[in-house]
Image 1: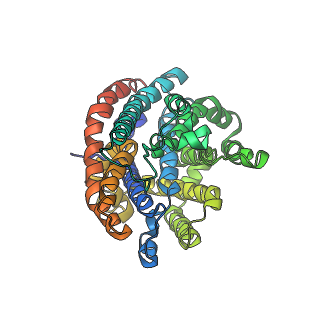
Image 2: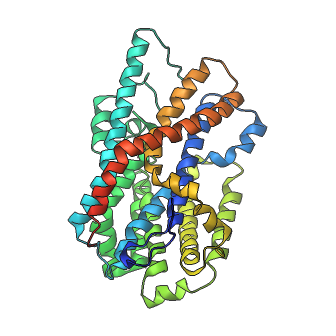
Image 3: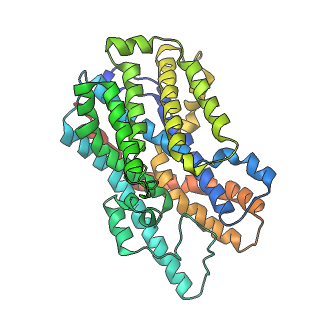
Length: 395
């Protein structure tokens, strides 16, 4: 596949290949994390192994990257349209989101429910005993009607028990879907009327307000602070492409590479010693800021440097395989947990140690997840992309 890192022919349809590569790597990280989570749920690996694989033990890292990417990508057509409104109007924007997100999501949801029902039936007849040492896909915990209904309306993140039901990784999709509604009806109007500082301020109010106003509210499943991360992506797109004098000033500053390194190194030194769930908000915010800085830097490099002189990180993200992975990363995110857990269930029958289980899951479940996701993409995601792209015409 011939990937063109930058399309200059239609300025409102700019394509940055590295964004797909970054998205693909983030999706792969999610798969690796859930393998790690499966192997360590109610079991412990030796300390030296845990320390070795600790870099894949931060579930909020890839999700935060996805949210920032969403803000960045949805803001690009706004910036390139020459105004501060979504091109084509709010209803066109919502149609795009519906066609891009919902058909694939509902297909994955139906697949998960069918497999849950099948697993329950197999257990009922005693053909296969489901081991409780699985966390992301649990037929033993039959989803209630509230879980099914809330998943249908993408409101399952509002309660912890529904957020974790049916297919664990789907919890974050509900939060992202809700942010999509805030984008044209709140975030863009605030930016148009009051500017970037007010936009950032309102995102912090939404993100942190519920925690301090209702301390007992279990807001982790909702993760309202993701609104700020989405806004970080919006601001990064503005820095890269806005014609506002103040933003052009910051864009031309040559510190983005150094700032990105400092932010990511600081993040590693702060959180690598031990994951701290209590600091999940701080971690998410720092990942969001670091990712936004990375996007500004990579876009500047991708648009200003030749392909042979780009920084190694940009060339890594533009790698053909990572870009290709990014094309079906949404399908991978939706389907991988089912594959990982099913493989894990068979391995548990062999009574392997957590280390061997982890290695076998890497060897077997990762390629099987990629294969399953690609088939799912061809059947339930790609057919809707032409419809989605058709609606982009004139925007």
